[in-house]
Image 1: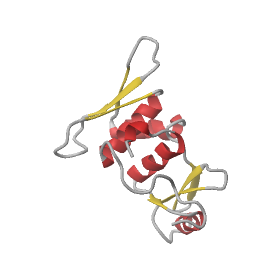
Image 2: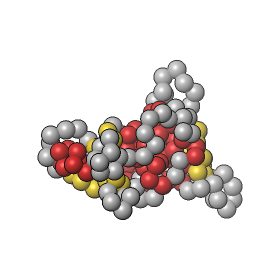
Image 3: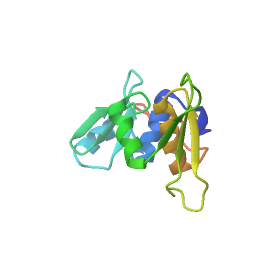
Image 4: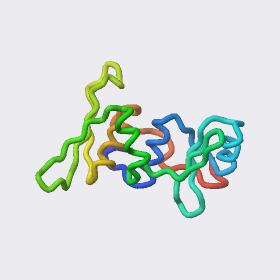
Length: 141
């Protein structure tokens, strides 16, 4: 799947994966909270995403939530540029050498956070990702 096509929960899922969270279920999220496994990203019954790690479980939507996406932008040193005067489209660039031997990352989005989170995912996995296209729901692996 092309990173440039990702939005919503799918983009947020891959941002969690880029941050080191593994795809899991609600039960595995409980194990992660209790310290029995590493960080997990999972979907709850209403389709919302949550992330879990030792003693922390929280909703996860960095492509729309500045309190989550902002620190990623700062930490990854993502550069953001509006594409036109009306700011209807944004460009996000990363040229800090996060992908050795690769060209700098450039992604676009309808919002600043979408563009930045796409750039972050592309910096870790490339312009296309392989693997699950959504987090596991209960009963899936």
